[in-house]
Length: 377
Ligand SMILES: Cc1cc2nc3c(=O)[nH]c(=O)nc-3n(C[C@H](O)[C@H](O)[C@H](O)COP(=O)(O)OP(=O)(O)OC[C@H]3O[C@@H](n4cnc5c(N)ncnc54)[C@H](O)[C@@H]3O)c2cc1C
Image (cartoon, rainbow, N blue to C red; front, side, top):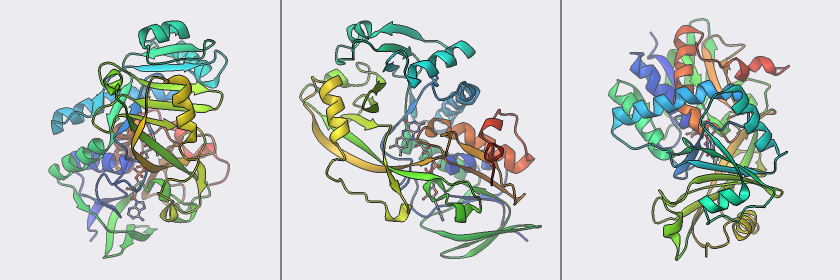
C-alpha cells in the first residue's frame, strides 16, 4: 500500500506550486524538502523576482505567463497576501540587441500592452536613469515583481490547508521507480507513492534525475543598496527595469523596505560543480559589474550596500526550461533547468506538473519545453 498518491521532491519555487495544485485537486500528496520552507540555499530567495509579459526570450512563453498572472492573483485571494506588484517595467537596449529584437518579435506575435520610446523619453519619464543615447526603450505596464519567499510560503501553506503533508529538513538520498510506483529513501525514512514529481532545482544533476541532459549551474549574486535619496527609488516612484549594456544585462527593483534598491547582473556567473559546495561569501570582484553599472546608469545613487545574497541559476543548453514526463520512468514527472527566468512561471508550472502527474498530459502549450528537443536523454 503506497503512503501517498504523489511525492514532490524539492519544495522550492516549482515544487511548492506542484504541491499546491495536486493537493487542491484532492490528491494525497507529500512534499519533501532538504531545508526549510522559503529558505535561501537554492534559487528562490532574495525578496523579489521579475514578472513581465515583455518576453524577449521566446513568444511561446506568453500563454504560460498569462496563465501565471491569473494563478498568482488567485493565490493572493486564497492566502490574503500581496504577492505580485505591477510596478511597471522599463527595458532598454541597442536597437539590434537580442533584447530589443526579441521584444519586437514578441509584440509582433502577441497583442500585448506596451510602449516604445527613445532613451531621451525614457530619461524624461524616469530621470533617475542615464541611458546610452542610442538605446531604444520598451515599457511593460503590467511588468513588476513577485515577493519570492511569500510565493513559496503561501503555495506550501495553502497546499497544507488542502491536505498536503510536508516534510522539511529531510534530504532525499535516492529514488527508484518500478511498475507499481516509486520509492524514495530520505535521511529519516523510506516512502512509497504511485507517482513522483522531481523539482530539485540546482540539484537536478544528470545522475540524480537519471537523464543525460546536463544542466550548467551558475553562481549568481544579488545586491541591495540604500542611499540618502532612496525615496526617489521607492515603490510608486521607480519601476522594475532591465538594461542591456555592452558589458552585460543588468536589472533591478524599486526599494520596498529598508534594504533599499535591489540590483543584479543577469549575464555571466561562475560555474558551480556541486550546489552543496557553493561559495556563499562575497568574493573580490563579485560586485564590480553592478557597481560599474550603477555609476553609468544610476549615477545619482550614493550607494551603501545593505545586503548581498548568493543564488544559483540552472541553465539548459538553449536556456529554455525542462518540463516533461520522464522518458524512462512513466511514474515520474520533472521540471528543472529554469535558466534564470523561471520563477514568474512557477504558479503555472505547478498546474502543468499536476496535469502531467494525474492525466499524463496537459492542455497548456509546454511542448517547446519537452525533453524531445535534446537528441540524447
Ligand atoms: C539571483 C536570481 C535571480 C532570478 N531572477 C528571476 C526573475 O527576476 N524572474 C524570474 O522569473 N526568475 C528569476 N530567477 C530564476 C528563478 O528564481 C528560478 O528559475 C526558480 O526559482 C527555480 O525554481 P526551482 O523550484 O527549480 O528551484 P529551487 O527553488 O531552488 O527549488 C529546488 C528545491 O529542491 C530542494 N531539493 C533539492 N534536492 C533535494 C533533495 N535531494 N531532497 C530534498 N530536497 C531537495 C532544494 O532544497 C530546493 O528547495 C532568478 C534566479 C536567481 C538565482
